[in-house]
Length: 451
Image 1 (cartoon, helix red, strand yellow):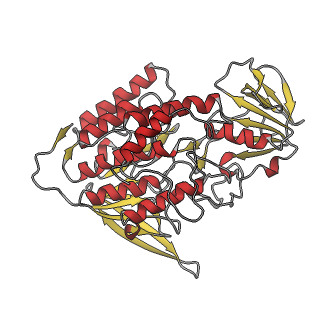
Image 2: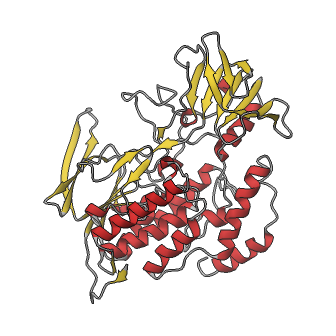
Image 3: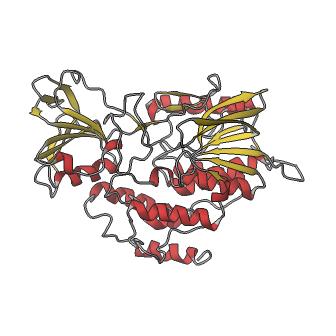
């Protein structure tokens, strides 16, 4: 990777798909770099997954391809699992702001995050670049150099207005919390109980007095188990990450148990676990994550999704065969989402302006193959390709060095890892009790440059 010797920056016509957090910061960085930007957003407002709706899908598991898809996976009581200081964009701090309905808590509810994104968009004039209620139907190559974007708007009479446009580049920012992944359970087709994916969870009310098996061990799975536990008869958390003989009551909870993964389900309503025990359950709740999904990409296999690996992609962003015309923001997870989106967006903007030069297609492909080989040799499953739990700092520092921009502050990094540690140790209290006042002081010293 090297810097360009170009004396003037190239301005390109760029389409951004999605006006959630990643799309908003991508649009800002692209325009800062001098590009002409159009943001396609199928909703009527910005915010992406942070736009709460009580609406759920007709198929509670989210498997029916004909269902009306609901984009957001937020539940009503959701609060952030990172403190606001660490999760905000680096030059636009996520600090409490005055106003009706503001939520000053360090771990605020989802409405406060949406308000922050709205303020961000307003501050940087991003909404003027957004076409609302405009869904991207397809993205296709044109002459191996440009991309044709077909979009649609639905009129009041129910018919669609279709529009074809050619762009120099497309940046995909459509999020990855909409298409559910479901645990495979032997015998589940005969089991008479109800199944639901957390994508369609909003409130605990449907679980009142029920025996619930919750599959998953993520932060949201823990939150939902505690919320359901308040009114359910029993909650059994089934996890692949514990030993097969695990069966233990959760600390401070009389009706929540952690146990091994489900072995099988049966037509008498019973569900067997790997420890050999069984229970009769009413509901299985899948808190099992999501699939990457790009139904609009019609690019002849240049990028595919294989067991939740999006690839081949150079450093999770550029497909070597069609870089830099096509790029992705926000695929990595278990990281600092908004700041990571920001740094990736700076990289894409700099490459498109010819300020930063990518390696050759062959070198990028070799890097991708070496990365995949390293994962395989380390025993990392393919579906964890974009998991940044152990590589977030090195990866982000590398990208920031290319952009010649600051990477994450030390206090932000420490705050992130301390919070993750405490989130799993004390899920009930982590959001309202903390011991990082020294980091908080450092954060606000840095924020003084911007507020």
